[in-house]
Image 1 (tube, rainbow, N blue to C red):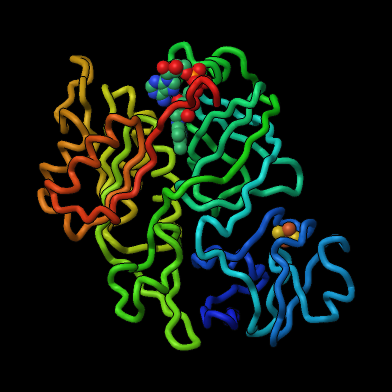
Image 2: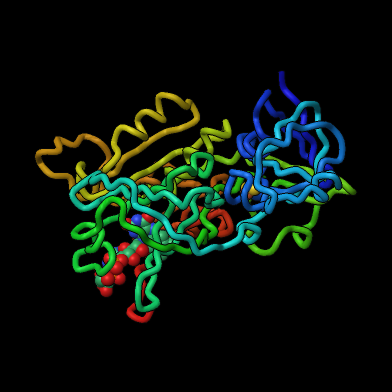
Length: 373
Ligand SMILES: Cc1cc2nc3c(=O)[nH]c(=O)nc-3n(C[C@H](O)[C@H](O)[C@H](O)COP(=O)(O)OP(=O)(O)OC[C@H]3O[C@@H](n4cnc5c(N)ncnc54)[C@H](O)[C@@H]3O)c2cc1C
Ligand code: FES
């Protein structure tokens, strides 16, 4: 049995399966409701039931008082619909709507994916979850007020463990520590989520309903909704997206792609992953598997310095040049790029030459921290 859930303020609708919580159903269908612990302890997911019935689930009294429940409130991370519902809930419309928090985390797994790439799996304290948009990053907090940025490599829909892909920078203070001293069970602290690198799902340019003045500020749009009368409407982008990863720039793009696949996004998605040699494609089977599973996804690895033992017959050279060769006219595309600053600069240089609209290039440049930070 499925139940229909409608958010009163926006008119957005989604469905919940039997025994599925309102929050889980919303996230599964790309409706971003706020949450933190997902265990009935913090109250972040609290909203109002306008009509319908729920099983309230189990939760701590500090998360929702008896009076609040009496008043029609429910914790959507726990509440399971027993009928169709109309609810009041604050939707996350932009990165700025997600609170930035400082949290401790335990290193639960360290796996070397290549000689110089470590996958670090982090677990938050009992009852804590980090809400983020696919593609965002966190800052690891170090002593002496220093911080180091790393992208979250998994989809926010599977947020039980946070994963980072960390490249060992020769002589690097933090990445050296990760490769030489860090052990499983170590504790660290981080702040986040940060960043504007996430998939734009709505057709910002294509919406003819509103003027740009009604859009949320600048590029801070994730699942934007445009006011048309007293309702909001969504125009989903069907623009082809080209995703360009340089080295561990694969991490945020993996998060974006896993999220897009889970949402059933059907627009063409073409990943170019640029590395030096074959061994630097540190999760080689994953994009190949995606290509088999999703007909709208294509994968092109590009090696800049293949080794003789690689027996490489695929694309060679700089990754942005491969993109330019395949797509001389980018006027209908969106481009998402993450990785080393020189790669990002080269991609920025493509904007004019290949007719890529400037506001359809989204990037995370893996700048390193300067001495004072
Ligand atoms: C938004 C963002 C997201 C990022 N995501 C990732 C990620 O997912 N995975 C990842 O591996 N890295 C990522 N980075 C880069 C990462 O933050 C740096 O590599 C890291 O801070 C290096 O820390 P360190 O203490 O080891 O080096 P430091 O001790 O700070 O640096 C030592 C010296 O190494 C050089 N150096 C440092 N970092 C780099 C670098 N990245 N490239 C070239 N030379 C460098 C500099 O000369 C520096 O003086 C990201 C950066 C940003 C800004
Ligand atoms: S997310 Fe914390 S109580 Fe629901």
